[in-house]
Amino acid sequence: MRAKPLHLLLTLALWLVLTLVLLSAVFALALPLLDEQLLTSWQVQQAETSRASINLTGSETNLRLQIAKGELLLETSAFSLALSRALTILLLGGMVGAIIYFLRQLVADVTCGRPFSRRSASALQKAGYLLVTLPVVLYLEVFARFYLFIPGASQNSEFNFSHIRLLTGNGNDLLIYPGFNAGLLLAGCFVLVMANAFNIGAELQTDSDEII
Amino acid sequence: MAIIVNLDVMLARRKMKMKELADEVGISQTNLSLLKNSHVRGIRFNTLEKLCQVLQCQPGDLLEYQEEKS
Image 1 (cartoon, rainbow over the protein chains, first blue to last red):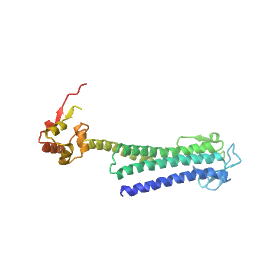
Image 2 (spheres, chains in turn blue, orange):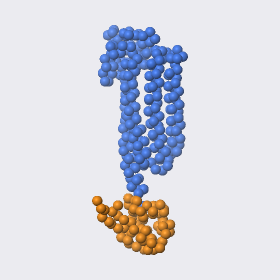
Image 3 (cartoon, each protein chain N blue to C red):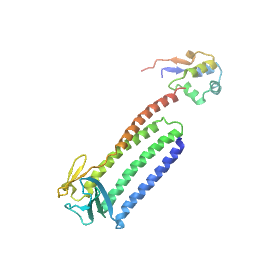
Image 4 (cartoon, rainbow over the protein chains, first blue to last red):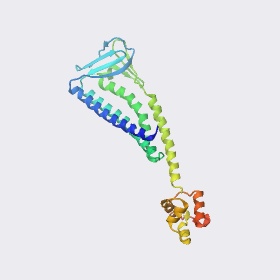
């Protein structure tokens, strides 16, 4: 594929991501104002396949917690969840947008016929760091969301670095394992290695430019 | 830099202008000016060869080593 159409595609993708992120954030904030319930879920293990309610201490009236098909579902109209969701959307969307922006910068340099520059190496490095950070943020977000929104979470659960054990009180404890996207981490590491190669390329390009 | 480019001296001796030399050697005036003012990291052998050919001189007439004062 030539660099120019790819640059155009990345520009379109960037605009699309920014528009979707802003719309989703506004939508998330608007739902509780329109008296709509917000849903959030966690993947659980050892959960019953049928729908079953669980009782946790400190349950609030505007909040419903249930287990369905291996998922712990939280239904609430609390504005704090909407705010948290909007912030998460802005953070993750912003990171994805930034990755696309930096890759677009690299493609722009390729289009100009000078890919080996300090600017493209730096753009690749930033994209690589963001790609490495993204799965970590996604992993930690599951824990943060759990402790922020499950009522009495600190009393009713045991925190382990790989998972949370939710003590339901009826002996059927639930294990919440946040998913970790190793593919993104690997892609980030690969992009960081590419950034190093581009740094060497930029040095060689400078040498070549300064030799008459 | 310890290596001095005496291009201006050779140009004066041959009564040549920068533009003429640039055209005959086949490099831009900008690059020739950078070379004249020693603002380059190096010079390719084929560029040096062309310069010597056009200016009818030896590489030693164009390049000179001067010890840097520390």
